[in-house]
Length: 330
Image 1 (spheres, rainbow, N blue to C red):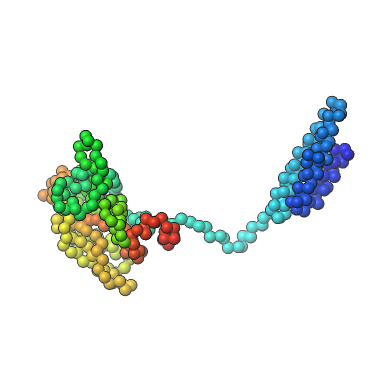
Image 2: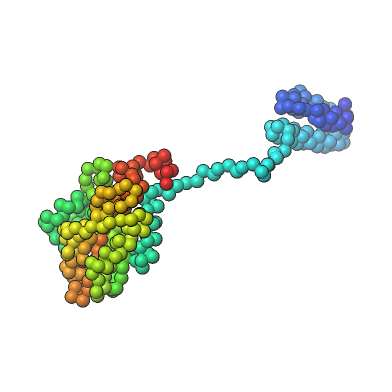
């Protein structure tokens, strides 16, 4: 059979193929080891040079054409023999999107509230020195107040000039910031802190804290009261009662603890949410500022604590499980 006749026969036969099984039989029939076109190609060795050149060119062209036909038919049959039709009236598929971690959500909200109150956001190192974490904050060596912060101390080289630790609070940034800036200023310092203590429903070895500091010539607890009440009312979006109790923190004097009570939605218990007070004169002196000319307040609050209250989360350890069933709720 000549190449022209073989081409017509093969292409006519290809038109009638209806499934992948028939297509495979077609491929074997023409391009297989014993296929009709293969036989033609093998017979070229018995022809003269001119005949081989002419017939071989036609045969190879037919082989390429049949391979293209087989490839096209295979795609057509695999797709069901029909082009995909998109129905633009059908409802769209719900796209699975990620979720922000609840700590990220509440930290972003806290930052937004404080920046609207003209506070600047600053950050500090998690690896701290003993001086900034304790000494400059009126907590000298052997002071009993150091027991309030269970500390992760780092192993020190023999020639180290000072001991290093993982910061136990974000308060060191009070000193670092006042050393390099002149009042007036008001800042917040969000960040991770570390405590060497047993974990339970309300304690973790690392957690997030927010430090606040406001310094000027005539700052008082009345300024603090206004700022903090405005902050909590905007954060929780509920009616809140406030209670300020005397307390003790070495770097503020006087010191207070802030309690809140929701007066709506059936929540009536007092909740401790924050420690604060007026910046101690010795803290100003450590930052090379004159305490006779300045006053300021500082406060610290646990971000997990606020998230647990806002989102009604019973156990702080849930924030660190990595459980998507928990995170996808937010």
